[in-house]
Length: 394
Image (cartoon, rainbow, N blue to C red; front, top):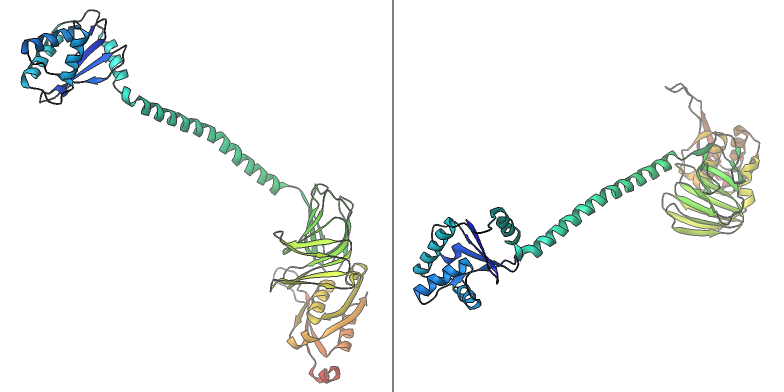
């Protein structure tokens, strides 16, 4: 039961807690000024009659300021005698049976509930703010996360669905091409060139094989050639790039202007001047720059094959691309020979005959055969050392 008595000084009410043993802690007195609640303990008075009267007056609101603080000090004692507990019990029973004037049980209860945890209010407010903040953050995070994922997904989709154009040159022939920015070039046999349709703002091409470029100058939009291992950047120049898949090297030959050569991940490697060649050994990850006759090395665009002090490996690779044949070197000793020669509009048979005149080599041709998928294999040529003629070239 809760009993509320008003006074001009304060408002008091007594709450009894359920307990088997009686003690002053079973009774909690709250005072409000207004509704400022704090827990109090009651204290003993020396004279039993004075104690009873003081307690009775206290709970009926008939006490002076001095009486109030006297009873307050009694409640602050941790241990009370049996007589005092008996007086509290009687006072409780009296309050139980005596209705209070203007007493509204629900109103008093609401006030008690609202103020019992006053001392913890700061903590509650902090937790409430944190909870609200977390909820607001979560609410804000959801659309932001969705927006971010949507952006990433759509950006990726745009990149994946961006329109690209591709120029393909079959083995054994050469193909001229014209790019949207006005740049031109030639693709060698068995090569592919890929570029974005919005090429004017993104002058990047992807090359597989060999190509010669004559690039229109545009300082605002550098021209980039991307291969499997290299990136070649220019503003306006003429140059050739060799990057056939499966070969042991990639090359850049500069005819005019300047080019910057870097790795595919943009690590700078070299800057070339006219008549310089950059060679990357893709197997050993080594590279070098050398001076060359660029006109001779890019003469393939005019239908000429020019060899100047080139190894047989390099000769075999270029013949394979030029004539669309498969070449196998059965004897490693052939790689030590260097070759010079210019071939223009000769058939593969004529070239093979001329090679035999310049080195102790012999070759065997393997006829084309029909494959399981209905196509025919490439013509195959196997080179070996002609032991009978080795001494003629020593």
